[in-house]
Image (cartoon, rainbow, N blue to C red; front, side, top):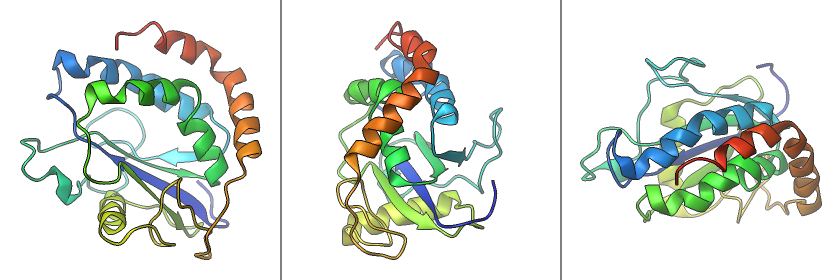
Length: 194
């Protein structure tokens, strides 16, 4: 990752309907490698945090979770942290192709949250966010609503803290371009158990 202008960070967090190894979450586990690979091939992707003790990219700090995990019976939960060049690129990845297939089935694997499932925020070009940043921003979004500090696709902001209108045509163009390099991944996930 190189320094430069502001970059968009995303952190998401959810609670599964069962523990690791439970057949109810098998569809999620089976899709995870394809989702990571689809992100790596997507336009605008900069990088993602790995998980300590798991092969792949290094972890961006010690993994922590927002307070919403308390009382769940879990000491770990599905979450991710990544960096993107812009909101349109992230949106094209999130709501099209391989990741869109996972979102379609998410209700089978995750409990309905009473908190925002994700948070977006801008970071300086030289910074890499850590897990604490993500968990803290998600809690802030839940407690205070969308702002330049913590926001969502529904209420996006610029790096300067101003309300932003997403360029939907750009999202579609990027998604179409991504699809060319991810057709094999999409074909694979469509064969997987839900």
